[in-house]
Image (cartoon, rainbow, N blue to C red; front, side, top):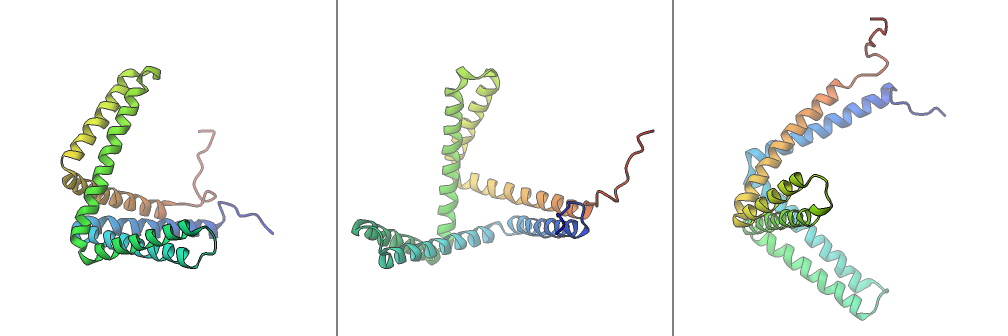
Length: 194
């Protein structure tokens, strides 16, 4: 049995194929986000609603069919399952409103996270050697978080567009990597005498 080498043609071909497929999927996802931002957000919300319903069914099944745990544990699973299912069904009933709500909730979470990160950075400033950079980071985090909280839907839209642009850029770079990957053994080596 021979060991797999990174220079084996089969391995390199597999890596190229993986990079190419991953790059193409990333590029297509980014283009879809940029061309149809509202529709793609609705699709993401639909996927999330599907996840909620499936999770609800799993929790419901755990509560009904599981022999483990006491009555409160089983009742908790059943209630949680029903809650997840109800949330998923309500989201599917009006995907547009659910999409806006999800965008606002995610933006608020991001805004609060940035503010908390800034406050934590401020609290650690006494232990940091670079106080100016820490202060700058903390203030930027707090200000960015406040801006997001003041207009979460606008912030979510901007973040969605930035995500689309990032996916397009990453997809293109990944595709270039896939086509540029060469066998180490065939790559020209510089002459050490030169």
